[in-house]
Image 1 (cartoon, rainbow, N blue to C red):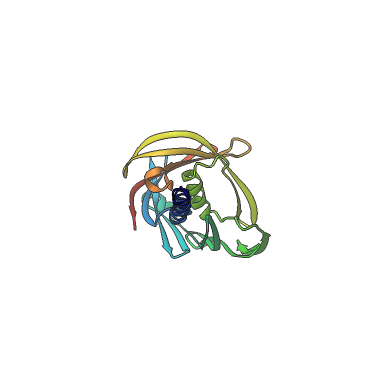
Image 2: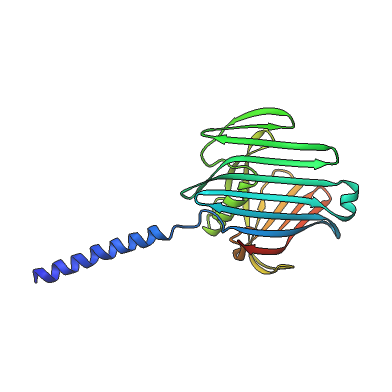
Length: 240
């Protein structure tokens, strides 16, 4: 009888140990899988340019790069190029950016925002003016914000609120879920969660379609500024 009791207790201990090891080996997603994607950017029916994005992961380090280049008539009129890079560290379920660069060049003019993150401070330079902000360990830049939003949609978090440093100051981004939607794109059909940025007033509105098939990175973005509507739609996606 004692041997049966001991055997039962041993099975429970082994079972609990195995379960804990299994959980330790399958953590929740902290960051989307490495990928490359291409998008078309348009204003109404007029194509403005192309956006290329790539996410690289090396151990606990990540690099997310975005490059937009005008094309066609937009290139002739403006020649705009936009580079946006964020590099950082994966720490458990958190992403901690270490550096950020936004560079918008138009002919001979440039608009640059550079940020260095260290500890509880973010020091940057926007349009030639230095700035410094006190931050927490979960403060993001504008590019890493897309990665943490994808993570939280995958985890089905109810609250989508983030502290972000951009353009010389710290601000709060809040997102609202609008439900699920299946959409067709040149890259295929995607099952998406539709979210929008909550803003006071009605002059600007930004909506994202985040697809399960892309680890909830955007497959479509629609931005309205007054009467202008800019739409960014994915045309190719591949994990790397």
